[in-house]
Image: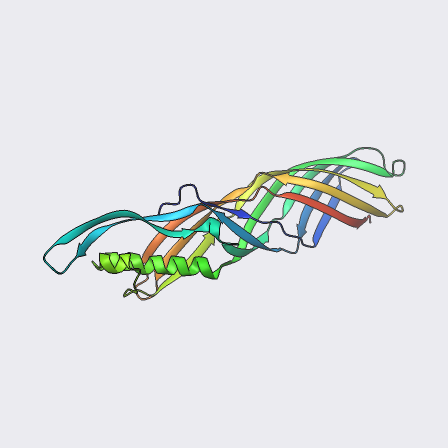
Length: 235
């Protein structure tokens, strides 16, 4: 399939987060960022096409060659292409300005690395139906039934859709601040950004034979801007 100009984007989501800091000294700390992985929607852009060629048998002794790009699915026309569970833990080294016990308000900067894993990927019904129909079309072409392929008829195959996303690592930068409520309790707010993307593969496979009828790969653009607001406790 031709997926030039197409791609996937992760939509905004909220979840419960957890930050754990180990202070090397009063100003430098190491932070692990995690939380409950949110369920997020993935929106598509662009159109996926399939170059098709074959022979249409007219039944009157005249065979017509076929060669054209057949639209498979328009990702941009769907409200969402899929939903996934997003795991995005991060590890940062941070520098906090000011001095504990003296400055209640202490801004900080951080630099680290984020890991992204997308699990429980579920393709939405419209997109899945388009891909299954394309699987039937490809099987009809393989069976020498180009006319049936053009008519989008059923084939001898039993297609199903399989989606897999690769894991990825990316740098993350943060800007935030803490405010001491008591000597142990404090409020924290931060904003983080990461330039992150990964590759996702879409396969349509025939259950009857295990043959892969369609294979396409596309990029998920994530580039998350993460805001965090919470309360912390120092041990």
